[in-house]
Length: 349
Image 1: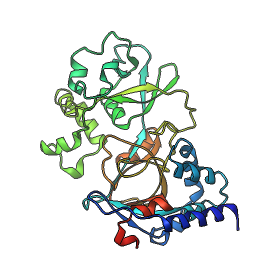
Image 2: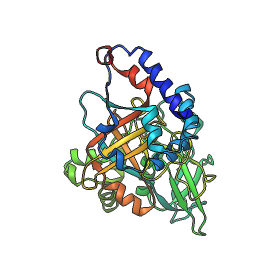
Image 3: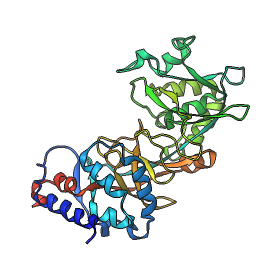
Image 4: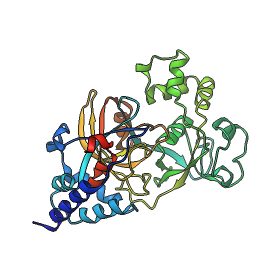
């Protein structure tokens, strides 16, 4: 028996001796078998293991640290996940799963303002930290940000800047060909409000018609009403320059490590631990069964069965991401002892 198999047996023994949590109000947990995961045997588990290793080193919980150390020795990725994890279905108030997609946009910009490049990307001002600050409207119309040296760059399209804030990270390409990367640097403390849902409420479009591209086109065609529509979202995101990330790596996620196209997802950390492997079963026009890793968060990603799939960088990835709004289910792979501890007493005995 290998060292990994010996450790796996010990983990299982600890799980058997650990008492489960008492049932109480909150999310529901259901322990599944790997045989219950549709398409599990057909996935490329090695890719998922690479993604898991890329962020597990920053996890400070002893359970995750132990598994991270063992992952460095693993030669069979599928066996590693099956030995040390158990699939847990986490649900909340019967809410259906929803998968969307996000990407890293690339905007045209300049290090200095010009008549073409006149919309600034701001660093977070000190007074905005630690609570609720000014709304989007107030930030953009009051002049509070001007003359303070908080600008990272200026871009040529206010709508693209708005969506960059929703994505949380991206690239800015300057006229001389130089590219900088920006990442999430904080926010003004206001909750995200969907402009797509507001368009439906106002009767501009039906729900099935709304997409990022539809919103962008409408705002550009209706500049006055469009600006007012964007002000509906009080949330405002600030940036920081992260150009130390190599061009061949993905943008930084919530764990301050590069995320991986089609292997990283953004989740609600209230329900899904950051760094955890997550089995995704996405329906829709392009079904997907794949082991991914929870490596990011998003202001619009709320709920136990809510995830945003990271597609990649650039316009092509953006078009794919914009079409994803699909049902399905997501199952979190939890360390064995944690999985059993989550179950109500009557289910675990």
